[in-house]
Image (cartoon, rainbow, N blue to C red; front, top):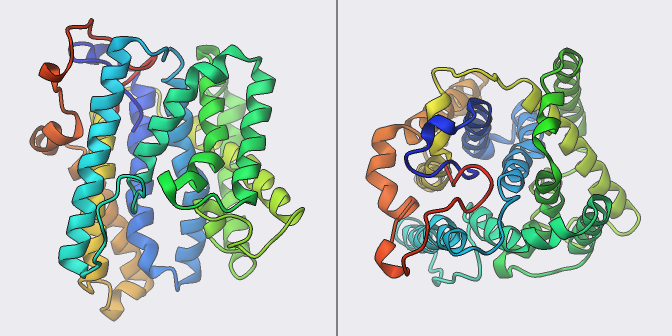
Length: 352
């Protein structure tokens, strides 16, 4: 869901980043599809494992591709058309759809993101702050971002703009901003790729062990310490420990991502489509009772749900789907803006 090259520059895309985005999006969709099956310890553990790092992957990449954001006219235009407008469209669509299908009676409010639209408003806020983090020394930026995350977790900041997540996920965006091309080369080294396997395996084992010892809400980062019934210093230790674990799993995941062009590389340009659209399918399944048959709560059913989630992610990132929904996911709106040079809103890719 990070940014991709402007039209006509697709050839300049680095297949590694598109591969990473596609694989992470598969985990996002599968994780959401598994959510109603968390009564199973195995599913709960995989859910916690995935949630510990799948959004941090996207947020680190988003930060990396926001390095050149400096409020230039073309960048502001891209920020509005690529983030703000899709947010308004899908926040409205999800609210109306929930009211119609699940009789939720929610009011349309762009200040209270619902379900998965929080990421767009978070990205909008983070990108506006990008120049601030880049003018400070790296250790000051990182330290301040971590302090803000701790304060966000320690205090009840309310539902407005989903600030809980905006603040708690901030360090990942700042880390992405601070990365340079040479840092990605470290992930290519043989020893890092070898070490990634036990790191991922250890993370999965720890998630399985954590069942009954912690709530998965820690990984979602949508609640403060008070709502999680902990106080200082336990809350601080959990927040910092989860940050370290997430970063290790992000690095391990990225180390395993193929560097070459693969059969699914082109689908990586459509991850924003899959992210914004898959919620309609997942929520419909939950609201309409599709998970009620006993089969889905067996090991075979859980695997089947995962495979269906993978297929859904691949379909929603496909070119035909992108062509249909491009007017609302990537609207051009050229007539709404003064003539300005077409620029990237960041240092790499536009939302895709």
